[in-house]
Amino acid sequence: MDSGGGGGGDSSGGAGAAAAAAKWRTDATRAFQYYLDRSTPHATGRWVGTLVVAAVYALRVLSIHGFYIVSYGLGIYLLNLLIGFLSPMVDPELDPSAAAHDGPALPTRGSDEFKPFIRRLPEFKFWYAITKAFVIAFVMTFFSVFDVPVFWPILLCYWIVLFVLTMKRQILHMVKYKYVPFNIGKQKYGRKKGGASSSSSKD
Image (cartoon, rainbow, N blue to C red; front, side, top):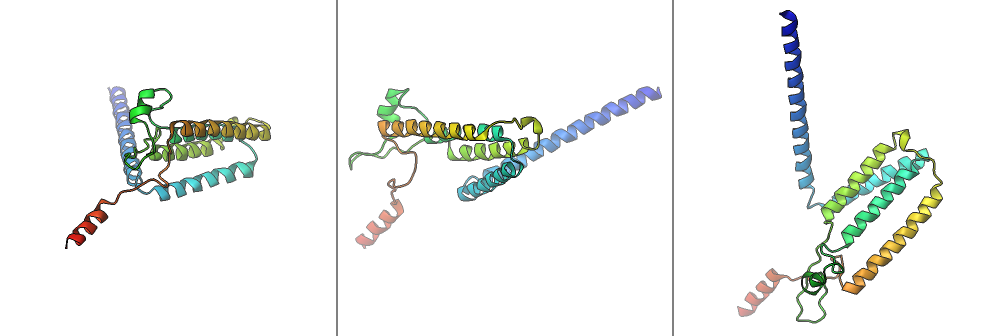
């Protein structure tokens, strides 16, 4: 009888611990998402934090002189994210109708309406993926199993060649379909200012 009661107490205690752990995980996830959502409009602060994380990772790799294969994998992943950030949501090369109607384009005449550029990978997701990648790579540097001996200058040269070829292809794609993936120099309309000036002229 006593042994059965003890077993029941252990099972109920284990269930309570599991429920508490699940509650803590849910609360932590909710709090993390809350602060992540609050950081959305603060792009400059977010990217400064990411630069700090990247600098910490670089100092870690340089100080221990290892984990170059991790850095190479990180570089390939970042290059893939960059291509997604610079690419339109609908590739006009795969969908000619989108290029003719809904694709990103710059106005060629004064009467043309500017079509905004819609990224395949939005800025916030781009930032979050980069930051998470640096954090994961930093954690991996504490496990010797990931420290594969390689000749790092070959990896560096290969990554540079891959970067140049990939960016050349992306730039040719931009020129061919006439889109610019940045907001620099694009026309902005100030409706409030125009309304205020028109009302003052009437007076």
